[in-house]
Image 1 (cartoon, one colour):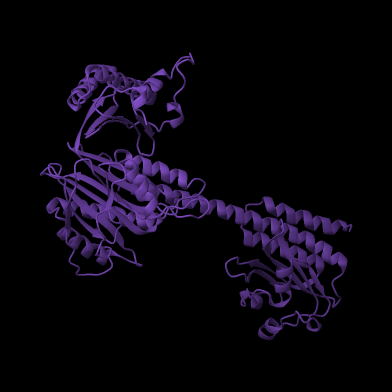
Image 2 (cartoon, rainbow, N blue to C red):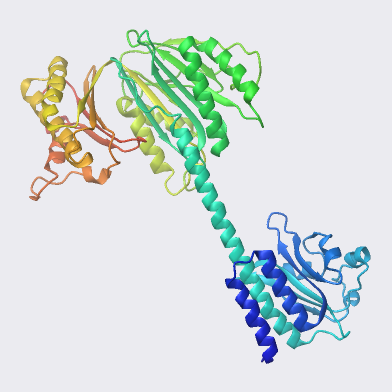
Amino acid sequence: MPFKTKDLEGLLEAYALLTSALDLKTVLTEVLRKAGAQLKAEASSIMLLDEASGELVYEVALGEAGLRIMEQQRLKAGVGLAGWVAGNLKPLSVEDAYKDARFFPGFDKKTGFLTKSVLCMPLLAKDRLLGVAEIINKKDGASFTPGDQALFAKYCEVAAIAIDNALLHGKALEQDRLQHDMRIAEQIQSASLPSDIPSIRNLRVECRSIACRYVAGDVVDITRLPDGRLAVLVADVSGKGVPAALFGAKFSADFEYLAQADPEGGALFNRLNAIVTRRSKQGIFITAVYAVIDPASGVVEYVNAGHLPPVIVGPLAGGCRLAGASGYPPLGVMEDLNYKSTRLTLAQGERIVFMTDGVWDARSLSGARLGPEKAQGILADCPELAVPRLMKAITKFTAGVPLADDITVVGVGYGDYEERTFPSQTKSLAQARQFVEKLALAHGFDDRHTGAILLALTEAASNIIKHTYRMNPDERIRIGVGRGPDQFSIHIRDWGDRQDPGRFVSRDLADIRPGGLGVRYIREVMDVVEFDDKLWDGNELHMLVRGKRNKTNADKN
């Protein structure tokens, strides 16, 4: 339908508002004012959809009854002419409102205004309802014409664009705010994770953590006590985001301070519980497990406050047992509790694993839960690689699904284990070889097989120096060696950028081209070679040889 020149001028002025710096309410007011002036209406209003309640909320109301209409604030879903338009996404033109059964006279009764004719239009963005606009009563008493409806529809297009733009901008700002909060929470939470793990002979300590998109409140503390024992804390603060991260950071600081005075688990948790209970607001609590491990005897003294029970795996594949249920509620739930430690003893080659409930609650794309049985089965399959294999399995299991909770796993293996840290320099490789050579010969390997192991070690360490650290001599490489009844393991750790595991895929020796033969050789020498990029700060290469004999291809499994 063609419009008159003055109508087009009004529309152009309305469209120009879209490029202005005015806020949404001002833009909608001006659009409604221009539409009402051209259509000579007594009153007009724009209502926005509240997606949470489905109600229409008055944003702008002009004319004789504008202020009184705004006082009504909300219109319930499906009520009145506007409710019908919102439900059907169709425009509505009514000549006599009181003769239309859909009309709701409640507003007229409250305001004293008399509604006669109404033009009501849905405000849409690609068939998505944003709100409803309406103009009421022509000043000359006539009814609204099809031409009026067509012109009002154009003004409503402008209003819908303005609303949609504002919503998109608001979502962008909200997303920026959430990302900012996430960065803050991640920084806070990273401070609650150990920056380095103490090196204690006979104990292999591993820690892995994957933060969910919301950032929860996992707390980890791994400390060497003055008497040489290892103290491990794994805790999970209820809730997510900045509040949980802040609460966790405060709890971590409290723990460090109190543990220095008295590391005994029961008394320590009694003091922590009193602090958390006083500080807790809005139902925040903390599940936690704390263990002190003696590297000389394998004795573990632990206390559990509503946390997942530790899992003990090994020494052989398939070996798995639980350390026992908690028996105590989380910290911060009740005052004046008397927490007490429990004692157990690890056998040589066993590994105790602590984890947060994000492990059990991890879900696949189909909605299946990982659960305790699957998690324990993965841990028991290869005790020496229990922690990295569990993290890899979780990553694969949850592929395509954002994590709903943080996942933190700490493993402590007890047995014949030593580690050394070397500078990332080629001249340090000789020292690294001497360290591993001594242990390989002590394990029972002959000179030939020991030499093959040392060459594999040199290839792996050289790759870190050259590719991961790019020949930076100021970095470090940690090499750990474990010796079991029928297994020799080497773990090479770096603190460089995360590397692509695909780079460690073997290729055939007949494929003659630069690079890659070192990796192939490592796999020829070792029974198991697995690259681990699930650390929050670096990478680790795990290499296992089974037995104490010259290895042949027939020995591989």
